[in-house]
Structure formats: structure tokens, C-alpha cells
Length: 277
Image (cartoon, rainbow, N blue to C red; front, side, top):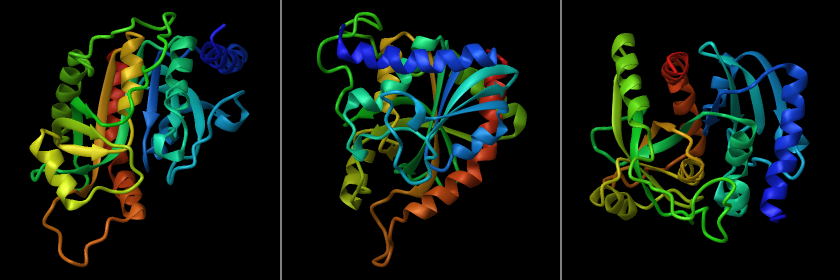
């Protein structure tokens, strides 16, 4: 058997065992980005599985990422939430960065919701804004490079609509009902861990990016490879412009604080959207 499949099945069977004993079957997977792990506190009747206890599973080392699967109820449905994700910049290969998504597919999720903290390169975006991801530009290594895992999807998956149009429409309706202002745009994904230079921010804006970050896209590619509908949202945590004052510094702690401040609004969108699935 392909060693990649062995890792997926070994980790997935461990999680399935816990699900069987708890009587829970997740319908929706949720990936919580930097500072957004607090959204996991909204999950009712939670069962927590630390990543370090799952056989062969990577452990998140990033700031603001606790490193747990949280299984419970959100929006009236059973979800499995990643309280912290795995990043390429942590030194993990793409196989490990995306392993959690394939494990969630193996245990039976039908939808994937992804979130991240991102810099707003669009001049109309400000700290605390929420941006629906309608498309992306990928500058991370593609996680499907190498022999195809036919058990999960085709060699050449279509990426015409990586983010589900029906879910986007519903999210907009929910935001309007709740009086929440939403932006919509293109997410640019780079490797990190450095923040971009002002010239790089300008470049990202010129080629069509509205927000930039260091995650999300590999997970989305693997989900779409497995034909899982995806909804994505970015929290704008800093204004990523190219006209800074001479003493300006991008600070990771500030990013976490801004994400935490926006988590309530994002939780409302996610929970009501899950409720309508």
C-alpha cells in the first residue's frame, strides 16, 4: 500500500474509533486559522483530540494554533474543527500539511469551511474586515505533485470554482440578515514565514490579489481533489500596503489580537451557514 494512504488510514481509524465511542459523525470540517481557534469555544458538547495523540499526525507549532481536533455541535450539526492548522513554513512537507483534510474526508465530512488571518492588500480593506474568498492565487507548492492518490480524486482536478458558489451566496444572505459587512476577494497564498515586503504587496495587488497569507490554499486544493465543497473566509488583520511610514513594523501578536476581535462575527456566519446546509 502507498505509504501516504497508510498514514491517512492509520490516523483516520484512530479518529473513527473515538467517534464511534462518542456517537458523533461529523458532516462538516472546519479549519481555524491564526487567532481564530477561539471559535472552537462555540462548539457544544465537545470531544477534544490533541494532534499529538493521533498516530503519525503533524503537530502545529504556529503562534495562536493550539493543535486539537474539536468534535461537537455547531449550527445544529456535528462538526470536526481543527483548532490550529499545519503550515508549510513550519518545515512540514505538503503531504503532512494536507493530511488532516484527507483524514476528514476519510471519516466522512461532506463540506469544508476554511478560515485564515490575512493581510489586506486591497486599499478598501481594513483591520477587522471579513473577506469571503471567491478565488485564489497559489504560490505555495501544489500538494498534488507526485503520484496521484486515485482513492481520493483524479489526476487533474478542475479548479474553475474552488470555492462553492452556493455557499458564497448563502453567506452573503446571512451577513445581510445579521447586519454584518462582508468583503469578497482573491486570496494570495505564499510560503512565509516572513511577511511580504512593500514591493511584494504591490505586486500581489497588481496581479489581482485582495488579501495575502501563508496557508489555506493547499487544504482547499486537496479538498477539491476529493470533491468536497469549500467555503473560505479571511479575517483582515493588517493593512498590507506599500506606503508605510518609516517606523512601521508587522507584528504577529497584533495579527492574533485582530483575528480574535473578528472571531465573533465569523462564528455567526459559519454557524448560521452550517445550520442551512
